[in-house]
Length: 130
Image (cartoon, rainbow, N blue to C red; front, side, top):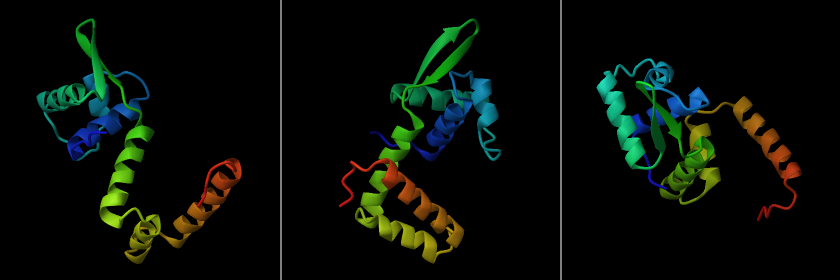
């Protein structure tokens, strides 16, 4: 899967947060506060995303509606796996260790992760955990 620029990711995140097809204005309203882009800048990012097959646009009246063609979970999983391979040689423990050792996750976060992993394993007993 093609990776996106940080700005393209911000636009996709805003569109995913809309929860449905959305207009440029609806997408702009979901962007982070530090994105002070002109309307044309946002339209250019949406056009790029359309060329990369991440969104589809369709005319509705005098507006375009933008629909995500890639699910957030699919993109996040692909990008996360690529970063994990590139930065940590595929070692998930190294990733978590880096977060913990640099105080980017708390002990409470680690406890929640451990609980979730136990729940996930119990709910997916057929999964190969080796």
